[in-house]
Length: 560
Image (cartoon, rainbow, N blue to C red; front, side):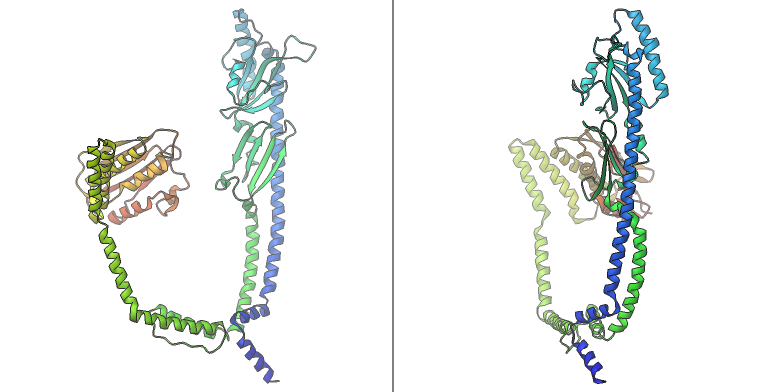
């Protein structure tokens, strides 16, 4: 009997290393633990997702009920207005009877509408549209032709029943025909209209409590009346990723109310429970690993030996010898590692140093070929040819490029004079104006009495490039203006770059000077200023999204 355990142990020792690890994991119960963890995860996730979906469904029902309530409120009000004598008789006033018409409009029509405004201060405007004559009275009485400016207007757009539309200015309009004042016993309608104009915020404020963590839209059969996206899901784009959607129709007019929520937010409520599950599984896994370590200690001795030899090679000691006679993967890895070390020693001794020397020589030869004078001579030749052929724009561009690259390369020096820095940025801006057909204007406010001081090279160019690329040029809605100010303030020189471009999103501002995020290229200039003048110096960025961005910094006239 004593020989059987010895043979079994020898057989296990001969197994492949992967087989040994699988055997240990199975013995201590990793597979059952994984199955249990996956099952608990799926059941918990299913339960919580059902709860989240039920909450979303309840929010959808609440939204539909709220919109139905708003529709009923303003349609009832519109029906009341259209049936009132003060409204019905207004379009049929005889304009030739000036006194009677004036008294009706001032003492009946206006007084009646003012009473409605007092009761409903959220109403932007109540308007009667007159199809019978050119009689008008402020915004309360307008010709039907005024409606033709609205994108929704057609001859059949308004009927005897209230219709809902969104005007081109974003306001909400509910409108219907006014009854014929001369038909008392039959239902007859004139071609005169009455409409109530509401702001979207006033009409849809009932959705404020519903729209937490949702994207919500309300659409009539003809157009979308309202959309809202919660700030909490601002980083989620509609149409990208997975969204859970619930759509319902209102009882009146079949308004479509759609609620959408990023599916990943539905999983957010599962995190706490999942954390507990993970913690429990983690404890169990720790116990499994502890047991596995005790069982696998026999197998890892050779791995530890190989690891020690690898650390010696990492520390620069290539004079090692290691060999393993067992035929499993660890044995093959050990012997292959020894062969690799022997090959490295061979390469170092015979050819590696020579190859490094050759590469270094080739690199220096290549660098020597990059002679900036070659570029200047080419630009000078282009300028001469352009003048000879009467091409002033080409001549101007070549001169600007020559100035720009001469001041940029700065003979390889990391510092330059303040005058050269200003000359560099002016040539760069002139080049950009030529490239973009004078699509923006540069206003310089440079103190003519600036001292001649040394400053780090290329401080202004990244800031100006950032204003152009990310601010002015993408903003097609207005003509671009860039202000560059350099002035002496006490014992410092103050630089300001101001543009009227797109601005920087508020969420990006805190990270611009700490990381390379967003592609704005400001972090490098900020760090160079602090390296040159101390941590009290650096960039200050202020931005109004959609309007402007201002970047300022100062440098001392004498280092502290």
